[in-house]
Length: 160
Image (cartoon, rainbow, N blue to C red; front, side):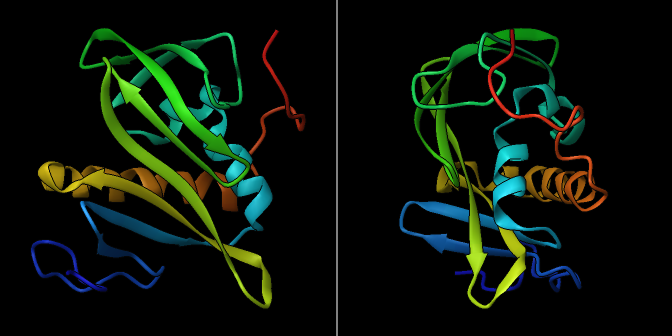
């Protein structure tokens, strides 16, 4: 639907921004100059969400890195809202927020280029107005990962 142009018709930026219709969702994507695995790990790191998400101001979860079944709560607009990760793999996760299906998150590999990938946030068509927020989130996220800040202590796993 939008190809490499956003909903307002502005040209995509130099870092591979795009908004593409995928069935009943819009996929907001951005190229990341980092390998897919550490990028995906950073995307699943609940401790890092407030650093790159314009809407998440806090996270509480027993799991540092989301997996299927992870629960917790996020602080959005000054209110704590429960979440549950409904599906997760190494390179993708989906969640519900306040029992409402929310965004999907994924990392796509580039064939032949192991040092680059694409981070994508999927949003329902009905939430198209959320595209600029997702773009801002992906820009912040890419800066964290590209600056080598994907894991603050260099380790992966569950929080203790």
